[in-house]
Amino acid sequence: FSLSRPYAVTSLGFFDNLDDGLLSAHTVGIFDASSQALLVSGILPSGSAGTLQDGFRWQSIPEVLLMPGNYVMAATSSGDPASFDPFLYEGTNPVTADGFNLDGTSLSASGSGTVLSFPGYDEGLSYGFFGPNMAGYTPAPGPLPLLGAASALAWSRRLRSRLRR
Image (cartoon, rainbow, N blue to C red):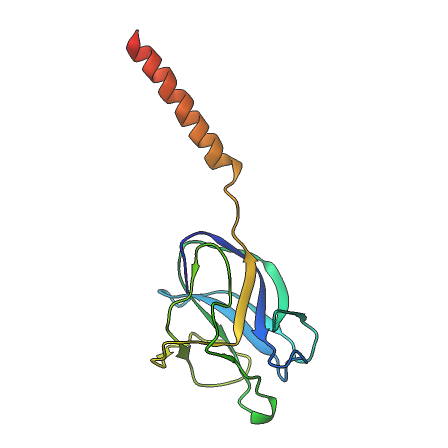
């Protein structure tokens, strides 16, 4: 996914197919797409411990501010068919935030367990399988940029008045 505006992540989630709890624990994380560095991660426990909202189980995390750029969201999944949590197949944008754009790439990686790794294999699909998700907010511009703009305006007026003299 890509961001054209900053986004503050406050929760990570995983799709709960029947809203009845997760069959296994999932480590969910967000990677920087170019460096493949893990920026934030959290563990959603099995069962119904996470908060259920909009078909996803959520776990709060310490707030992480993502700046405009490209990212990859990933999660671990159980290799055991008896405890495999289904993904949301061909879903729409899992995040509805100003400046958020989901690209059409579906990535995967082999392996299972709790160790989260960058999913480097492009499945070549034009739609996604949504298991992991994130929630947060688009921060409002702080007072410093507004103060800077007001100062620049005041200085330009002062300079114009000096030039007229």
